[in-house]
Length: 92
Image (tube, rainbow, N blue to C red; front, side):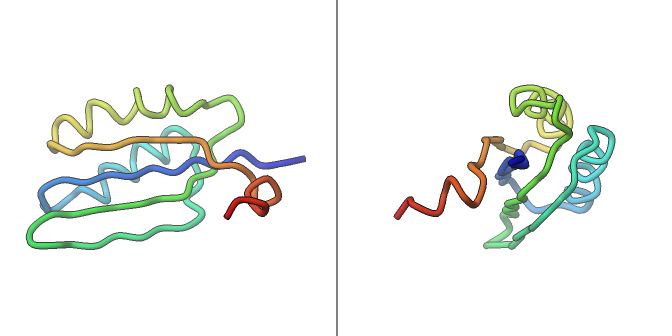
């Protein structure tokens, strides 16, 4: 059985509370953060998170749940499905 993964990418002006606010939405949605990369570049904050959402939560629903928080913090973001490691092994 393959596990569904999703990739969340996010960017915006760096400010306190971004990680906490986004993490809260993910926690409340039941997502598990499997891997992360975050950086600050010239006052801009970027985040990439590999997520394992609950099986009943689709990317469109996750995007909708993030919308209010992202809007309030003036962040741009996207969520997309990732193939399993087995499916992605042939890509190159």
